[in-house]
Image (tube, rainbow, N blue to C red):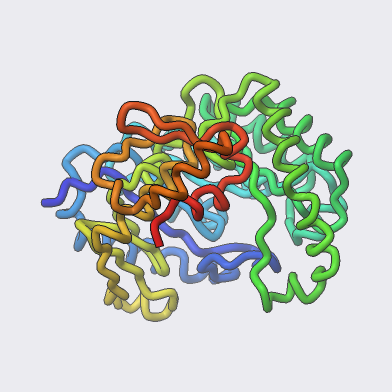
Length: 359
């Protein structure tokens, strides 16, 4: 037994595939939701030995987990191991009073709601089904069901977005008083229909990203949220514990089509093909994570956090000259065997990390 304490469960079904999305998804397929849950539970039984007796976090991502037929979703949740944090991602238009109550009764402790924006014209650009009132309604349903740990996702850099739109989105999110906020730059993969449709505007938005990022941080920290990870903010210590496990380099088991696991120095990727997965094809693409890769990943992910990163075992991945440069520029600070990016360094993010990594 390896004692893995974090479990990711992939539910790929969506009502519609948004143009910018590059996740492993399947549109509709309502007649296959039950068979998919059966396949998930078979894989979980096969892999249960790698999990610790007590699991710390379970995360149901997608796709749109709450698009999965509710009886099948509840059946899955009741079969999963208990954990201190059980998160389910949800799109606002799928959240009804019945769904909210069913999630709470099934042991879900945290819901991450994909709002993305409160501006109807921007939601249309993103091809989102929910309207602003759906976001507010979903939040109310979840609160009424007893949830006291809710997260909202926002996206910025959307084609057509203005500074006023961003400020209105942040105000709309803060008015709901979520325990957690995730604010992401829009990433549209080259070659997608989204980039074909919005290429020129995406290029214009890219020039504004630094300003948007700084506005997001200033607004949310000014409202009392902790900027604990590059794109994530929380009240008190309501950090996303499952994602924190990723950023801290902990092992996790991923089940479902396209799911990724990191276990005992090996990264595994499940088949992204629904038919194969339903047929019980759990053969995985394997990648060895050697000490160099592990150290580089720990640096890249760990420096996204506001907590100091312990450099024990990571020294060989650092470029001494690069470290001296970023320290001199006031972008990073060394403590007793630790390294932390300064506020300015965190705004520059990946550029600073690239400078730090040994070639």
